Image 1 (tube, one colour):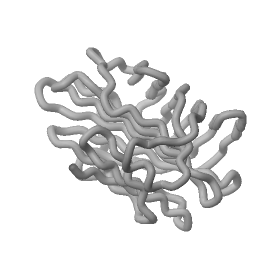
Image 2: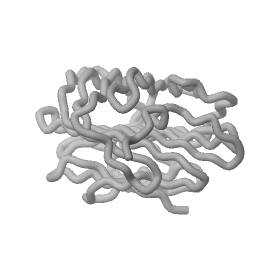
Image 3: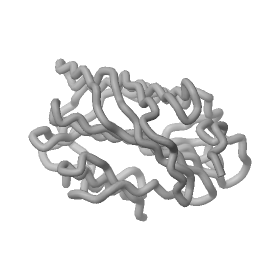
Image 4: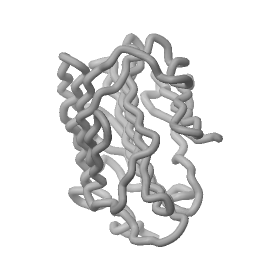
Amino acid sequence: MPLDPTDDLPHQQRGAFVEQWQFDFWSPEHDLGGWTHFTYDLASRSGWYVTALIGVHRPLVLVVDPKIQIPQLSQSLEFRAEGIWAQHVCETPLEHWTVGLEAFGVTLEAVEDAMGDQWGKRTGVGLDLEWERAGDPEKTDGGFSQHCSVSGEVLIDQETIDLNADGWRSRSWGTTLGVVNRPAGSSIHIRVGSTILTVEPDFLGQRWRSHLSK
């Protein structure tokens, strides 16, 4: 059965309902991978957000906000919090998304530092990226994932990277919190409030995998 394009957009549900959007890319040319995850919990009217940037020869740059108050989730999935603005715009369901970010994150000396207080060098981070369909959506247990081409700009402090890369995006929803799996690699464990988010960049396969634990 084909996917309903409206499932790409926020659902108008009530009660204990969780929505998630996930975007990633790999650019071997720039030795850079990026992973963005946004969760909205309807019951608490709050969201949490992570963007991770890393490469084989690049340190981990991390933007995290574990508790963003969002009384009403907009169609553009836009929010503002201390030191961060982000939006995720569905231009055409199942076809085209635009992701924007202006934030201050941290550059960490070791990926293990993502587990603690995430102390590091204050780093400006910007995303102005397009995810466009490169394959049919594939159903998952909680939603679907889709192969995409990714283009636009990534800003890390004074560095501007013009990106034209391979990527994926994932969409999931339901009454329990979980993250769509990606292929395996070496792990980065990020503490987001009381939740541990494990992100595994597979440098050889140029993919991301992730899962949650308490």
